[in-house]
Image (cartoon, rainbow, N blue to C red):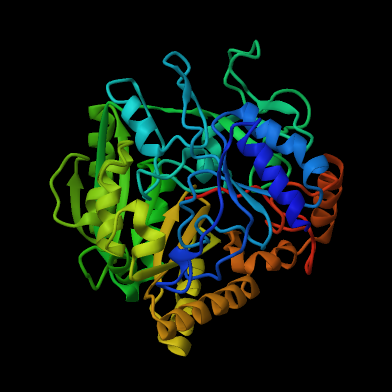
Amino acid sequence: MNHDLVSRWLSQCRGPLAIDVVEPTHESTARHGGSNVSSFRSRTFPARLRPSSTAQVQSIIRCMPSEAPGLSVYPLSTGRNWGLGSSEPVDDGSAVLELGKMDAIRLLDATTGVAVVEPGVTQGALAKRLEGTPWMLNVTASSAHTSVVGNAMERGVGLRRQRTEDIIGLEVVLADGTLVHVGAWPGDGNSTPYAHGLGPGLLPLFLQSNLGVVTAAAVQLIHRPEVIRISSLHFTQENLEVAVDELRRIYTRGLAQGVLKVYSPAAVTAYGGRSERQYTAYICTNGTSRVVGAALADIEDAVRASGSLYDFRCLRPADTVSDVVADAVLHAYAGDPGRNDAMLEASLGVPAARVDQDSDQGWLFFLPMLPFTGEAVSRARKLLDRVTAETGVDCGMTINGITTELVDLVVTIRFLRTAENTAGAHQALDLLYEAFPVNGFLPYRVDIDHMRQVPDLRRDQSQSDLLHRLKSTLDPNHLIAPGRYPSSRGSDPEGCHRNDI
């Protein structure tokens, strides 16, 4: 890369384009050996660009081929992709395109329950705007300061459903600067929130994708239920397989809504909760008072008859509980992420803005999908125990039942950010990437240090070949996000749009 050309391009971004440009200082990387909470190697980049509008994003992309040939941009939203790389690009050399200053809630349609938001809109900000309305947001258990758009683009999981189901339309800047809308986009003469449109669906092309820069999303909100109750219960490690099957039966009988949350003892500890020896499950039931009352009675009967589940409690979202994990979960089921940051600080010791630079604790996440069966979850637990036996690293496990057939497993590794503990934690992560795919449990999100394994994880080379053809057509100069979800191993210049949790 010609540094003179890059400098001239950055000057143009600062001057005629009026874009905020921040060049790296490297001062923040010294304390823990890296500028991200996972202690992945810090990447090098010429600058961070912080546009404040879609028009500025278009201008940045349009002038790159002529002003800085060979340079690429790496988009992210608020950069809080903790445990997977935070605001680091996958490869060295790309200019980081931070979209956090684009923080407008452009539309809030109280009739259809659709919000149009930019990448800098946090789940806390949108949830706040929805207070007192018939609608609520599908929030995650992560910080209130995380991006709605960024997390959805990375297929994050909320307390109600996978975040991709929230997205019904996208505004995208393509690699030639063209602006397109895909899916159902308010203002395009379409008043129906139907994401699929006519012909081939284009919206999914931009999820975990390097085909464009997403500058806004149309988000389908959720009707605020009349009554919400959360069943809390426990089971032991010895009963894991049978307990998971019992919990699945509760869901298949239509007694619960939202995502089943089950925390292992190590997961509760990793998130700063009270240390327990048993697994803790949370089941959400909502609807009218009569419907919820009948469902809760059936759930309580199922718990008593199970022989594996015990300590049934019925909780309201506003109930006072002493455990920070329970408190965050109860409120999040009701669309309120306001208690999430207490859990974050209990785990990492610092607020969201200081997690990457100042926390003495590190986080790594491994995120595979499993069948929603006791046998599959039990087998996954044995794989985690094998990794712990080999490395001494305790792996927390959160079971998210996102459908009656599918579990999103969140494997959490919290570690003290010393050289020895960091090496052990990363060794454990490497072993997880080896053990789980061999057993048929593939990750659905990948961290920046394991991105080059993606082509092998896909298994079907024809899928990678098709992605390569799409990339070559829409972004022949590989301007957008090199290294993210590549279509081939090695020095593939392709990548993916990068967003956060």
